Structures are given as structure tokens and as C-alpha cells.
Amino acid sequence: MRILVTNDDGVNARGIQVLCSYLEKSHEVYVIAPEGERSATGHGLTLKGEIRFSHVGANRYSCSGLPADCTQMGMGHLLKDCPPDVVISGINHGANLGVDTYYSGTVAGAREAAIKGIPGIAISTCTDFFGCADDQHFDTAAIFLCKLLDRGVVDLIHEDHYLNINVPNLHSSDLAGVEYADLGKRIYKTDFVESSKGHYKYVSGMVNYLKLEGSDCVSISNRKVSLTPLNIFGTSTDKLLWENFIRTI
Image (cartoon, rainbow, N blue to C red; front, side, top):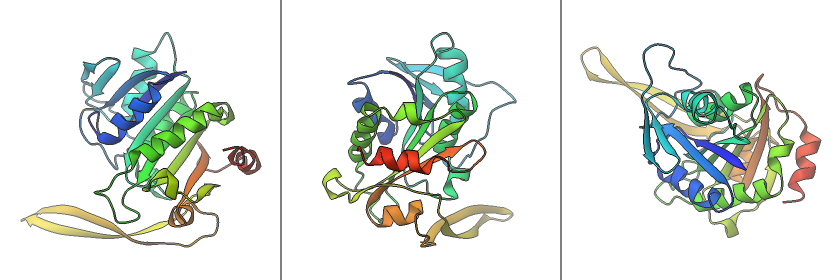
């Protein structure tokens, strides 16, 4: 397949490098990713001013804009005459569970593809969920995603849909399975710290999550990969189709 890859951690982030190293073994891969970190930028677009677009390596480009800009640049400029079969956004450094999908630049990269009529997949390694961010198992997520691609997952992503995948930050052998999951809810504590007079820093961290049966948060806490198909209107659909697919993995 022809695959466009983006993220919100930046073109030099380890997650996207690991992902591409696996995808390139079997697919034609193009990368357009932000030149620096754009985490929690949501689904923003750079509508004013110019976007800097730079060649940084073989089929690799950096963009001064946001993740959704990167997807737009890929489909509307770089691959305009030969559209990608799928847009993959990730591997994100940290979970994108529940309401995170509204803040996440990674998810926005995949959602923008769906808006433009191309299947999108957002994939994240939950480095923050088990409190082990220094021990990052991006290979687990990359291997799992390649397995999904080999099983024809792109053909299951219907029009106006995209897939949000979260993978526990564990070795592949330590995973407890795969589940279809609805969006859950993580609970954050938010504070503002004054750095100087009239200037504040935004400080936030997860303190808990609602233990909702069938939610992505619960799947991850049970050491299972969560697959959450979403549409651009925000709702999960086709539960039976995805549960049947998961049985083949």
C-alpha cells in the first residue's frame, strides 16, 4: 500500500521512526510530520500565514504547521496525483483514550484523512498509563499495526470513519489480548502555576479514569489493545463487524 504517516510528537520522534522502520518493509511510505512537538493541539489548521515544508530525508518531510496540516499537505500537495491508501498517525508517545481524542493532534491527523475520504488510523503507545514512560515499547504497537494491515484492516474502515488504537506499553508477549472498545473517560487534575507576574503555565496530569465496562481505559488497564472505530461525527459504529475482525487477529 501507499501510506502517508504523520504524528504530533514531531518528525524526529522515536515513535514515528519505529513505526516507519516496520511499515517500510512491506509498503510505500511517505512521512509528513510537524518539525517539532505539537501535542494536544487538537484539530487545528494553519489558515493564516505560510506553512514551511521541508525535505528531511527519503520520502520524509517536515511541516511547520499542525498534524491536520500535515495530512492536508500530504493529500493536497505531495500525493495529490497518487493518493495514499491510508493515513497512519503515530506512534504517539502516550495514550489517546476517551476524551483525549478531542485534544490529540495524533488523532486529528487520522480524522483529517477521514474528512477527506481516506481511511485514517491513529495509534498510540500508553507510556503514561502504567507509569513507565522511560521504558517505551513502540515496537509492540508497530508489530501489531503491521499485523492489522496484513489482515486487511483498511478495507474495514468505512467512509467517514477512522480507527483509534491504543496499545499497552508492554512487550508483545505480555499483552492480554485485543478488544473493541468505546471511548472512556480519563480524569485530569489541572492547575495553573504563575511563572512570573501575569504569566502562567498550564499544569495537568491524569489522576484516575472511570471504570466503564467496555471502555478503552478499562481495556488498557487490563493489558489489552483497544480498537475504537470512530466516525467524523464522533460516534462508534459497526461493533459486530469489528468484534468479528478481532477474532481473526
